[in-house]
Length: 453
Image (cartoon, rainbow, N blue to C red; front, side):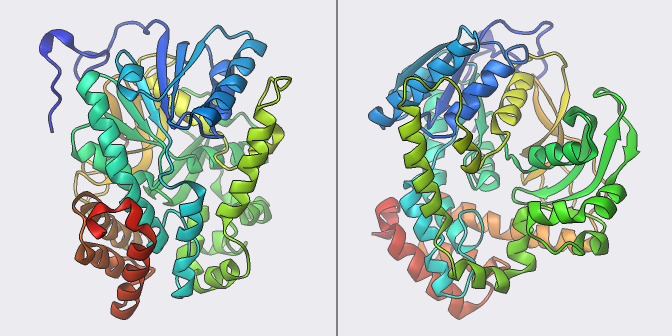
């Protein structure tokens, strides 16, 4: 779907017209602004003020009471750090985004209650219960894609030049939906920046000196190499992956929960989410013995909101580090700054979820992959990557086939499409199991799937 913007109202940084100078103060909108993640983002705004000069932050959310609490802490964080940005709140999306430079979307359709279900009912069928992969991940995609697409359509209707940065899971499927429908959208996950910070800490260097050969799909990635640069602007450096594997396998095990000897055997560092594929049956057994992660997060959120309501609190609390989403603000704000032509360096390299465009030749051009990308006012473009070993390419192709069918089911509905997506998933792949999971998924999500009623 092409943009409706007319030629005499070109957005900042439209393709072929990158700005000659950095833009002035930015208006940033966060859809899902009442999230307990928001103070992490606001803390980043204060720390990274030279990277992204935000003048106004608008938090959009229908949960008025919770939004007021989060906004109150956000204002105190900025004031405490001497930042002059104005924080406003609203439930009116159109008024919020009308003159925004960028919109960050961080939603959870159905809240932690539905997440708890996504993490529970697949286990009764002998499958992993997880919010972004397997049957639970499909349920989240079916609920989420129509909502985010509607939000993006409404943004484009009043402000077609605004960039959309999507942090809503499942990021790959949601971002592909947006890009397929012609929206100016880039997806973002914190797995890569988490690895970057971990490797820098282990090697006792600045994180900007770490460059990742991070390849795959969202939540299905491997670090095939780690390069230590002499300077952040260097194009080449020294590979430190062998050192990380030889000297720090226990730390890598703690980060990924994968066997410590696996890194040396493969010669790569898989992401945390590969454990659901490499150790599926063990994960099912472990998950059955513990309450859903959603229950823990719901408890954390109640505690966080109680702390946020304390007017003496002027910084993000330590408890927030247990919520997940570490380094979210740094990744989101540096990406947004580059898209808007702001920040100290143009054309920065950052791992993002972007259109494939031939980067992985065994996937279609419109696939969304997660690789190092060149980010600037023209958008996000994947850098060339070396061919994937068949061990990884096969799984990527298999999971992407599922993602195609999942997106079709999310956009068009229908039991048969849901069943096809589950049957295609490498963690399902059996007729009777796909039938049972389809029935369970629809039974638990009828409220959010009008076509299933």
